[in-house]
Each structure stands twice: as C-alpha cells, then as structure tokens.
Image 1 (tube, helix red, strand yellow):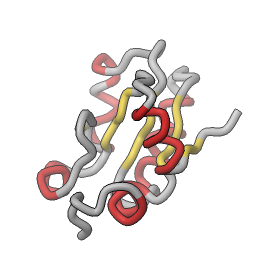
Image 2 (cartoon, helix red, strand yellow):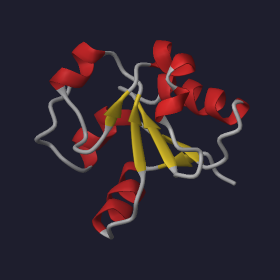
Image 3 (cartoon, helix red, strand yellow):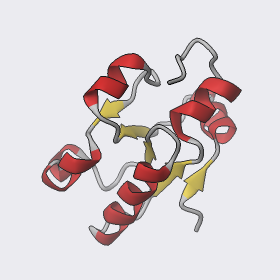
Image 4 (cartoon, helix red, strand yellow):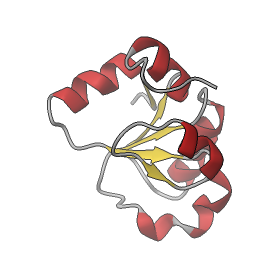
Length: 106
C-alpha cells in the first residue's frame, strides 16, 4: 500500500466528492496564511495528544508546507494503528503551484 498521494490525485478525488479527512500539521500562523478548504489543523507537536480528534476508520491525508512534517505525521499515525493514511507530496506549496494559485505561497 502506498502512503503518499499527489496533489492532482487528491484534487481529482475531492472533485468526485470522495470523503477524505485533510489533516494539516503545520503551525497556526502558517495555516492562517494558506490552507486547503475543509482541512483540519492539528499541529504536528500536538498530534500525540490529539488522536481523539481522528477517526481511525476514515482515510486521512496529512499535509504541511512541503511534505516533510506530514511524512512524520503519517509515520506516527501508522505506529498508532491508523491504517489508511497518506502524505500529500509537496504539501500546500505543490497545491498552490499545481492546483489552486489563489492559495498563497510562503
């Protein structure tokens, strides 16, 4: 099973109305500058104490600025028994470049 997803794959799935939980693991100041609509902010540092906000039965796509912190989040969630998690390759920066230029880059 692949634990990654591209921004194009994610956009196509969202356009089809598929239910995906978008987990944004950036910091609040980053989230206030740029976000994907419908995403939920849980900063990486608070993820261990915020697991009760996540449904292990849902597909979770983690994202950050460029994909490094979200990769760490995916690894952590897998260790906690979450089976259906993916890292958004390139993060919100790739989303802004390839999908939605109205999302500010920083």
